[in-house]
Structure formats: C-alpha cells, structure tokens
Length: 563
Image (cartoon, rainbow, N blue to C red):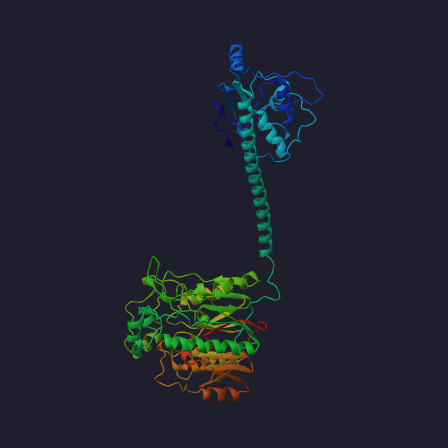
C-alpha cells in the first residue's frame, strides 16, 4: 500500500493529490464524465459537490479577480496495487466492503450526490478489473476543497496535478509489469528444475572408466605462476631432505622464473602434440598462487594448477573434486571450476568431496622424518603425517580399472578419505586398498600404473604387498627399467620414477618422455607406439604425463578386469 500525499503551493494554493475539480458545475460534470465517474453526455443528472466557500467569501473572491489569493486542498486516499483480473477489487470493491459502498472511494464525503462520484456510470466506464478502472477509482476517491477561487490558479493546479498523476500511473504500470516478469521467470525456473531430473545424455562430455581406452578429451595443467609451498609439516614429510633448504628459502614465492618459462614451453608443445593426435585439450584458468589467504584454522599461499590428476578423478560420467591434504592446495579447485561447470551444464555429474578444515589436528606434529629408516618403519606400521581427524585424499592416490579402483594410504590420503570414496562409488564400483614398500608414499601412478586390460607397470623399488591378487586374476606384471634422469636435475617434489608416469592414448599408443630411451624400448617390445615428448623441466614441479593430465573422456564401456 502506498500513502500518496503531495503538497504544492502556487500563488498561495495548497494542493495534496493529483486532481482539482473546476468550480463551475458544468465543467465538474464534464470532468467527471471524462474520468469515467459521471453520467454520459446525453444524461441529465443533477450534480452536487461540497460547497467551496461561503457566499461572502465567494463574492470577495470574484471582486478580487485573478490577483486574489487562492488555496486548494486535495487529499488522496490510500492507493492499492493494480487489481488482479477476477479479484474482488477488479469487481468494484475492496474485500469486506458492503455492496452499497463499492462504488465510492474510502475518502468520498457522505454529502456527495450519487451522480457526482458514486452514481450510475455512463458509457465511458472502463472495463472492471483493468488498470484503467483502478486509476479511475483512485480519481473518484480524491476529496476536493476549493476555499478561494481564481481560474488561473485552478488551471495551474489542475495542470501540475495531471502531470504528477501521469508520473504515478507510469510508476505503477512499471511495477506491475516487473511483477508479471518475475512470475514468468519463476515459472521458467521451475521448468528448468524439471529438466535437471532427466537422465544423462548419451553424448555426455565426461565418460572414462579406465586408463587406456581411446582418449578423446583431456585437461592439461598450467605451470604459470606456480609457487613454492610454505615449508609446513605436511610438505616436509613429502619431500627429500636435500631440498629442504630450497623450501625454507623460497616458500611462498614463485619457482625460479627461468625454470618455469621452460616448463611452460614444454607443456604447450605437449598440448600441440595431443591435438595432432586427435585429442581435445582443455586448460585450467590462470591464477596468481602467490596471494596469501587465511581460514579460521591456518594461513598459507597457494601452489599451482599444474597437476589436474591430483585434484580431479573421472569415474564414468562423474567428475569428482578431491579435498586435498596440503594447506597450500586448499583453493586449487578454483582454477578448474569454469571447466567443470561447463561439463556440468552439458550433462555430466559433478561431486565435490567433503572439504577438510586442515586444522592442526589433521597432522601429526611429532611425525619423525629425519631419516628414510624412520619413514620405512612408520609406513610399515600404517602411520603417516596425516591423521584420521577428518577425511582427506588426493585423486592421484586412486587408479582405475573398470569396476575396480585401487587406492593407497599415503601421506596425503587417509583411510577416512578412502572410505568416503568407497561408500560414494558403491555398489557400481569396488575400491581396493593396496600398499607398497615405500617410505614416502604419495600418489600411486609412479608406483603402480595400469596401462591396459590386465597389464600394469609395477615399480621394482616399491613392490606391491598385494601383487598376488593381480597374478591370480591373470594380470601381466611389467617391471619398468631404471630411469636415466641425471642426479643434478632438480626434482623438488618427486622422484626419478616419473619415467613410468606415462599417459596412454589408447592400448597401442603411449606418451613417454623423449629422454627415457629404455622406457621407450620397453613399450616398443610390447607392441605399443611411443609418442615422444620432452617435459624434463616440467618434471621438476612434481609430475609426469599422467600427473599433468586428467582424462575426461575415453571411448569405452564399464567392464570388470579383476574377476
């Protein structure tokens, strides 16, 4: 409801409202007919309005002519929103009013004659329930008092009042139209909700069940703006002692710019080769990872968006965001959100695992990491720097083989995280926990890399404790050759065994490091064509071809390879 009250002074005229009735009775009838409240032109009806002035005052006003002081008072009633067609308002009255008063406004004076404001309507009456009918009723509700006359003053007030009336009418019309548009938008929203329940389209952009079906689309990471993570307890437990001074010096700052520039060039060449092989390549958004951020539990700078395999895993038509375990990777998902939203809009499933708080309770502050022997003992006992305070995992600690997915408990993936994946993927998929003789387990694909149906590369330095499970299933266990990467090449976040961290384009094509000739020969003996790419500088950031990518779509179906 809107209380419409306006004061205007013109030559000592006081106006509240938007209309003035002329003093002349003939003009009053014409004015009322024009507004839809009086009798038609051919109807003779006596009009009665409130007396405007006493006889003496009227004579004095006529004697003073146009220069006399004039004062008009118009009081508007409460204005309601435009009536909804078919409502009680649209039928000529407010709810709760009697039939005898439906024709009058609430402020209409009792001494008005029926023909003046509430009498029989002429042929110009607007159709009930329309916006025009509502505005006409508002005009009839105005109470007019003209205390002192003068035609010029009345005309001026009438002109200004009519202009204000148009402004008010336009505002109400726009408000009514906005309401109608909002209603239509709400109906469209409900229609969109109905569509969300439809089954996944057959041409879903996300579809991958294993590591070797023909690759059609892949996400490749970025080295731009990569930062050295702060040297916290979880970083210290996952890195080699010889690189600790590097982290202490450069933590929170960019990796060496010259090295990053070379890594960027190598990854761009890798993307070009993938495109030449018929693979669609997507890239994460560039982000400045040097910015410091703070949560209620910690503060840190970022790391990078170089390794999509660490944070994303595709299982069938679903893409899952891993929660991560390093504080420097807390907001890493932001670089991939635009890509994932695009997949989601096109029909893919999208799941984000529970985000850990990464509070101090998630990490063992007394974890002994001064020697490899200490780590071996603790790993054998199932103790790691991450506790079971809350679920956490990196997607790279899981590797797929159809209905069977293999995971390891590592420095960044705890049992609660594996259990969350197990429950989330059941009953269509089975999650198996496997372990290795590894003093510093972090990411499974440089230790146990499945390259085909029933074929796996198994790191000889980190033998699998459950290898008999695969042998009984008839799998072929392949031992990759020792990597030949020089000792003086910086590997700040990984081991030399990135040589076996390869990307299968299909069962007969593999992307392999151009420098790792022994590994190339191994694949050629298996009848697999090698696509050679040099990413030696990109290796320094902690990953090989498998880590630098996340296969989004492979042409294949869900099968079981372990039964």
